[in-house]
Image (cartoon, rainbow, N blue to C red; front, top):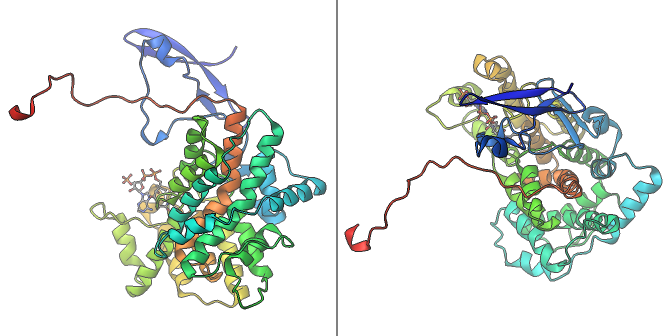
Length: 428
Ligand code: ACO
């Protein structure tokens, strides 16, 4: 007999089915709640207890610190796969064979040109503009240059839209940085791998050859894989909700980029570095900042600590911490910021406040240190996160459309005024 949950309201019992996922997570299916109860709804600010969809893409167990894409552990993927293989896996469900991967890459490259008029839009931004704002705008602008809406019932049309955005997005990412640095806006080099091409597009000086550093290629590849998906987080939920109105892929992605920008989400990597810099400038006293983070009258939070879902070590943070040590070592960088980071981490891991609340370093505590060693400006960190998250957003948007999910439209509990009579202005 299938399991149910019983809800009693005003002495009347209502039964709701329990559904179980492939990793045995249980959910109460309340699809019929309003209909059977005569309009009772649920309230769950921040959706802490709400499953918004069924998804076969990413499995995350925050209590045990497990993250898997399509059943493969993040540790194994970061070690053995490259970013494009992971993108294919997330979007289409299985790892590609060599022919599929070669075709996928060739198709992405064939779609990587962007209408030269987009450069005029880039030109119009001030150099001081935050690259995340520029990236969201340029991604949205792609809708104007590619106005045809995707026929989601056609596998070919879906595939074409996927390779199109995977081809164009790295160019936009590079342009947001080149704009800031006053460098000419170049197109990529189709003889290179996906990640190699990203680095060249970002760093190539107009008057010099660009030499790829395999250490940096490897580090960026790993970082992008670790950021590639994270089930129903804020930006991914945004992409799914915007897409659920049948807005196009580029418009949905642009909304996701804006959601990612905030310091409580993807913007944390920039905020971490700024915090570490501030601690360094202030004499490197980590204890002072630990005390601030614990003081409920002080809005300061230890950036890069805590996570909505992980109440254990973020598995990505473990991999990144090791990568940060390797990259800094390989590049011969001795960064005092890293020592401050290590000091904060040790103190937090041994501090009752952080231990009781299960606040561990998250993925962004260390990613900024690597980006910095790579020569990427602090304001670009969240843009790099967006580049990594792109396949996840695409995969989730595609799944949502293929599953024909209804438009995302939550309910509320109204707490405003009851009906009142209009007062003429002279009586107010
Ligand atoms: N520093 C100090 N205290 C913290 C921190 C922190 N970084 N994070 C949470 N807390 C405390 C809260 O004050 C709260 O304490 P209380 O129970 O005494 O009131 C308790 O821990 C629970 O915190 P919530 O905010 O309720 O947890 P929530 O799940 O809503 O928030 C979040 C998670 C937003 C990530 C939070 O931990 C945070 O702000 N961290 C810093 C920002 C950050 O690193 N964000 C990146 C997340 S990872 C990503 O998006 C890739």
